[in-house]
Length: 144
Image 1 (cartoon, one colour):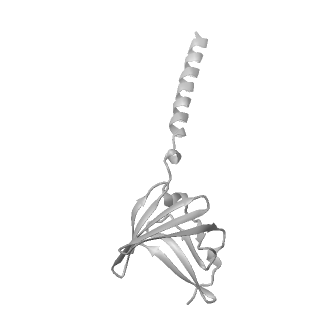
Image 2 (cartoon, helix red, strand yellow):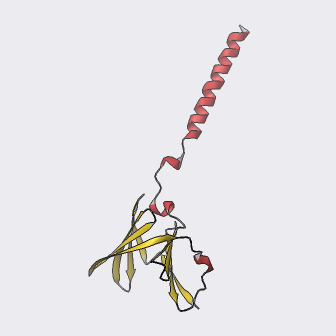
Image 3 (cartoon, one colour):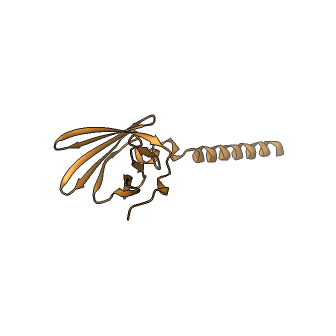
């Protein structure tokens, strides 16, 4: 009789343990990442010609950009108010930028180490390719 009760307790314990593990085993990792989540912190350059951008997973500041101006860099952000996120899917980011009443749509896609940006405005479109870089943009001297 004791053996039967012990087996039942073990069976209940095993079922409870299995259920606990199965519920805890499910995570949000199975959900696809958005473009901003996937490429957060990555840095890109336009042929190393003094222009850099960094992708930020923050809906208030989507991109940071640095432009070489003599011996220092001009620093700007694509921030809330000027930028509206149109699409932030796994493989594409589409933003609309409003500047001085003019509206541009920028579409970002990445393949390997190449970031392609298609800039569309009332005059048509332009395509720009940037390459991934490991340059530490935080060490740039910012122009005052």
